[in-house]
Image (cartoon, rainbow, N blue to C red; front, top):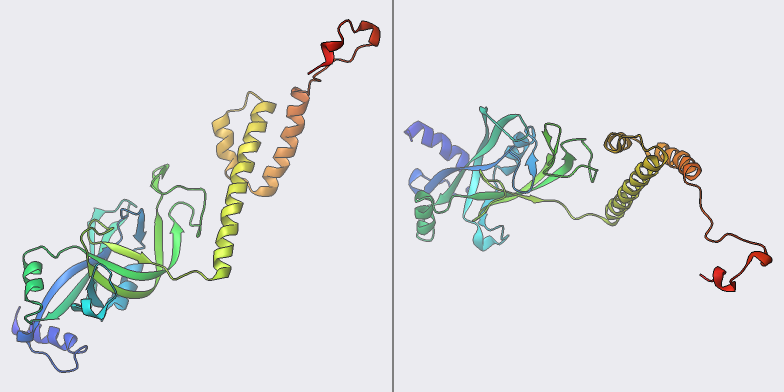
Length: 282
């Protein structure tokens, strides 16, 4: 690194140092913090979230395996940049972007082995700990639960959860197996309050109710009209709301009842016709 470049880097580094550091006292390296690719958890950061994450991660410490201990603090990020690689396409179909970080640690006897492991490519994979404000379905944009299943394709679109609106950055860690193949990401969400937890539970119950209601409407429709295409009707029912489904259920119940009237179990006969008194025993 040229002298002028190193001096510029030292200015950024010394914003975090109590005593100004010299080039001989610090070891600097770059790392891929996270990107906008769909990861192993079928989640990804929204492309526009990477800039804000970059701002939040400046000044954050590096630790090991997300163990939040002062003893594990080894390095600190002093600047970041979003790198665009439009020639690469993500699983979501847009251009690939990733967050690059510059970090420094002190050249001390304690850190000598870590520096050697970084140089040798042993300490390579990293993962970040952060808080995101929104989790959105890539198919319908719903938050907190919908009918779509992560990992499945709907037409030509892959279903995954998109993480939006970064709230905070906690730390970045050296890890063995990151969630993101290119870097790694640990998604941390704040603890839900009681009201949010209740709303989430109610939403899950509502989702199960709607699923059963749609299934029952499709069943009754097939009973009422065997000329219906079950697959087409089921797809149409997915777009209907609860009042419409209830009305269809009522109508198809009547049609099915007319088509398949209830048959009595026993046929009443006059006493003189009863030859065997055991005929009514069931």
